Length: 243
Ligand code: ADP
Ligand code: MG
Image 1: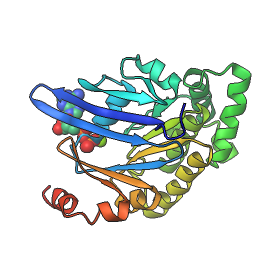
Image 2: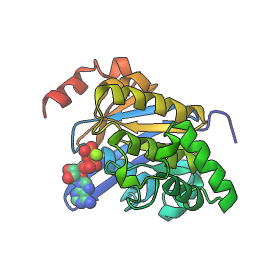
Image 3: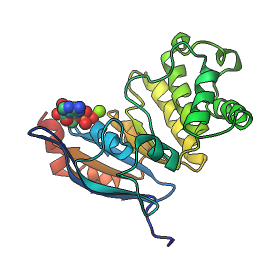
Image 4: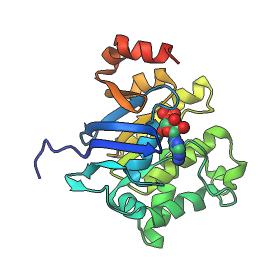
């Protein structure tokens, strides 16, 4: 392996739904340890891009995805997550009737492929990492507050020890102070050695944490580069105003 090899490389991926090209020949690569931001107006193909990278619920119609140089676009979804590419969903995806601790434990076992003892330790450690109060860990996920469910979502991801974590609009539903706390959680994940791809509608958060920013419009990449330069790009400004 060479040092310049990207951790995640997406080459010319497309996804069609009938006549609609939801993702249109998108290419990018991410280095290990990076926080890579993705922006774009509603319906620009951001979530579909995560869907086809993880194979959930469908692979790309065309194109290739490589993890540390190995092709993963033909793997089954569980093989992709076990290879180290994990995603979160826009809607809450926890098991509502399980406790927070049980949710994180399940993630360590099924996504992280740990035995029960290791998973138990990983789950408590991950909940420590996101600072979910000890007395809240035994509550049913459905009884947690909006922010506590974000803590749970992040803890579940950390416990599985992915190489790359894809976060789809994690700030949705949060107040401004909570969004700032979420930024700290993202840094915590990053501090665990996990590379992050962040889709976010809340631009201040995206600009704060991203080291690189890519913008989609109508499924295609319209700009990619330093966040502060990308947001000033007239093509990007026009795409947002045009909606
Ligand atoms: P974003 O996450 O950027 O808001 P999406 O990736 O969810 O956008 O959607 C991109 C486009 O693809 C939209 O026009 C959406 O309606 C369409 N789309 C997404 N998923 C499906 C699907 N399963 N079947 C048909 N069309 C879809
Ligand atoms: Mg989306």
